[in-house]
Image (cartoon, rainbow, N blue to C red; front, side, top):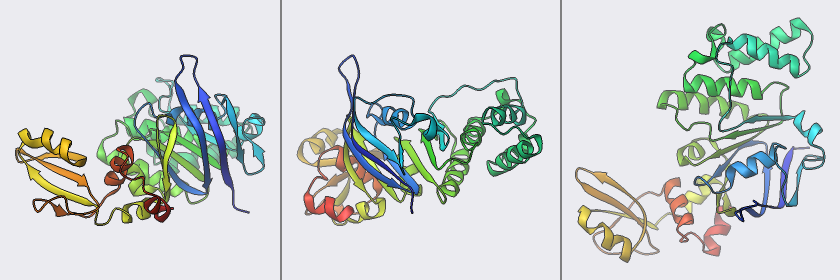
Length: 302
């Protein structure tokens, strides 16, 4: 039986009145699942609830046969969690700290523990740095060490929250490759505001904003539904305001002193525009702007 994480009608409102989650329902199977949304969309609240660190106001969550809300200890035995910000002992070597956490995980046999620590450091490409103190680690190395910690106990559910923020391009690629490998045998939920992370890794995704799921889809199929609906033209910077007033602008970027404007339209907006191949960025901005809401497009993306 394939392991599934089922989230049903999950809600959370904070004491200041902010509705962090509003009736969230998702079914997530093994593989890489991307939760995409801007900062403050509710991603971290959902991740903390899934990681048994926070209580929802309403709703149910099941991981296989486990009730995530009521069987927290059992869930934690099969859970790995890498939060957005996590502290490390700066003056301790990577190998020594991982060994310490392995003991806390219940791996008391020294030979077994040594084998587990070595395997995880090699898997995260940190074996050659095992005796280096964590305070000297780069951002990417810290994130990979965090994954090594999260993988202690061989979790079936791995949650990573904004893992590539602040990483340089090379570190980001190494980290994403590692996550991709892990997604072959377990459920990996990647929470991020970086569209490329989801585009390159995830077989399914959900876009969340203001505590609500706006779209759940396969990234490739979602992009396909935008075929023939994304148009582009080059305009002087002083015409940008008029463009944003007259068209459904998806995104803009500077190019040689002018602005490249991408817009959403069922038909060619004018002869000045030319059709372009859609990308996941276009899906994201279209959903956030309320243009990607037609039933036919939503059904086709599922």
